[in-house]
Amino acid sequence: MSEPIRFYHRNAIREISGASTTRTVLQYLREDARCTGTKEGCAEGDCGACTVVVGEPDGAGGVALKAVNACVQFLPTLDGRALCTVEDLRQPDGSLHPVQQALVDCHGSQCGFCTPGFAMSMFALYEKHGHANATCAHKPPPSRQEISDALTGNLCRCTGYRAIIDAAERMFDHAPLAPLNKESLAKTLATLQRDDTFHYEHAGREFDAPRTLEALAKLKAGKPNARLLAGSTDVGLWVTKQLRDLGDVIYIGQIEAMKRVETTDEWIEIGAGVTVERAYAELVKTYPELEEMWLRFASLPIRNAGTLGGNVANGSPIGDSMPGLIALNARVVLASIDGTREMPLEDLYIAYQKKDMAEHEFVAAIRVPTRTGKRANLRFRTYKLSKRFDSDISAVCAAFAYIADGDVIREPRIAFGGMAATPKRAARAEAALADVQWHEATAQAAMRALADDYAPLTDMRASSGYRLDTAKSLLYRFWLETRPHDPLAKSKLDVRAIELVEVK
Image (cartoon, rainbow, N blue to C red):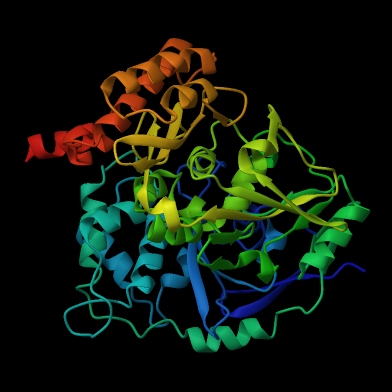
């Protein structure tokens, strides 16, 4: 039997029936709830005009708030959660929220179309930092760089960003509001939580949100053609841009077992439902070399919604997570009603959009080895080439790793995205590096071998020649950064960092 979608919005519990299983949160807000402050710009999660804040139980009796793109989130995924939009920022007495007042004070709005999205990203940051200002003992206010990172998912075509970033700094100077009553909100959301699978139907299409891995496996076995949905940051575009009928949908976002990160002496195990933002936050504790890739992986609202397991399961040849994970010798755990099996991540990808998975199987977790034993001497880097620094798709994504045995290379691993139909290792280049001394001639031999490993395509992002030449250049950069004698610091090679120094 179909159940209504239940969520908290505008100080009340809403129950929705009769909406399509793939109706977006944005469509609901603008067309049904008449909350037209939230705008549609791109309908693909790029511009941020539709940014809202979603709250869900954090597992510790509180509520976790995160900015997401309403244009690619499907309405049934709100079940059991809270939705906050720009209309909610207005105070009961009609006064402006400090976020809004700061935007006014700093002239952070011109045409105003993008402003509600900026306001909601700023609101999420405001709540995260506990309304930090000089008069209250909460977290310190964010740095200007942290503010810029939080706003990577919001585009403005009128004012430029200085005034908006100024406003994000200024919002902490206003008299702080009482913190959002997360305790009361958590109690309200507790009344909406379900013990069993949420089942919703409309127009012959079914949406199921199981609560356990066992229930997911059973559903997938019974509906092998059902579309698995996690963060909707890719699948959402199939609906908004390609107008595809997804058929039946199984949503994994309510399975707590898939949202766990567990670290042992040997492995960092990341459940397939862990968001990209949280997954990278955990990975950089062991592999700080991933920090820039973390910040450049789409935008914060996309990382808040999208999952690492979804990126891996999608298997896009330009997915940014796979090269680094493959270079680190990560493994993928597949599950089904028959049990689980595990394989090296690179073995999952057979051909373009084809994976070594049965119809009833799904990605349950990713396992990344820790830096123990001989891996304490691991040398590792990832690099991303794209037309802009923030929120862009890679033309080439590269990852290199080896274990240093004095000056000798052991167990080299090279992986690229954007160079083949799948994320792919460079077998011949690895052979040129294996068990030899790490010096410039070695690097150049491996660079030449890349031409035998890859025959990249030319497309709208880059030509074949550009991809191959830059792949070689990235390998040479890796040599410069990790050579045994006089390695160069990242700041000496990073064009963006050099440009910033020169501007100063």
